[in-house]
Image (cartoon, rainbow, N blue to C red; front, top):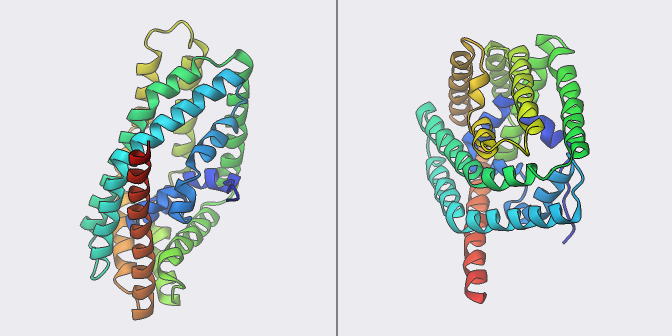
Amino acid sequence: MRHIKPSHALKWSRGWSALRLVLTSLLVATLLGGCVIRVVYNQLDWLALWYVEDYFDLDRAQEEKARALIDRTLAWHRATQLPRYASLSRELLKAAEGPMSETFIADRYAEVVELLDDLFRRVCPDMASLLQTLSDEQVEDLFAQLAEENEDLEEDYSGISREERRAKQGKAIIRAFRRFTGPLNPAQEALIRSETEKSHDLSADWLRRRAAWQQEFRVLMDGRTANPDFEARFTDLVLNPNQFDSPGYRAIVQDNQRRFFQLASDVLGTLSPGQAKHLQKRLTTDANDFDALIRAGKSQSRGQ
């Protein structure tokens, strides 16, 4: 099968927290980028290695270490996490038969956050071990790549007006809904644009927070070979990025989350019969894909 290489836009899109909230609210499968789940999941070993090497070139020993890390993580994820994804997707499928409340969507989002945190807890020790093998040149390459991304984000977040940022965000959210509902009607699109306009603009704070995180990560990487607490500190940075919040930032983020949870509930509550059918079909496909991945994993285990 032909490999699917993620575009730079996929990484850029991580900055649009509102889009991620809406996508996550609709289906946990969107964590895989909105692509066909089985196609993407079965290539995650290659995709993960590509993602790592997008930041720094690995030597042979490091590549073997990275492949082993990825293989262990995927085996653990397939055995222990996929059933949780499948259960969540079935829960969403059942809920799609009627209105989805703001509370229901918020609770499902919390489940997805926990799934991500479990993944980070699992991978951080191995990733820390790999990072400690980097040469000074590789570290420079890593932070040069991060600096390039920062420039792109700075242009997108600060180089345009608040109105332009909100317009782009509204378009991104509309595209997210369309993946699951098909085309939206003018009233639904107007609702999304209106509610997006009312959300807090955290662009400057988010960029400052990102810079503070990277600065602390750079300090950690510069002392990577001599720091006995490297793994613990790296894990803390990954799992607790909120430690870099400015005063009041978290409360505003939570208010934005509440607004977008309510928006998702409101839009889903206005679906036409055709849109509802489209949503059910998409959710059914995704749930079946998770089930198929679980069956495939069990077959592989029996064959070993």
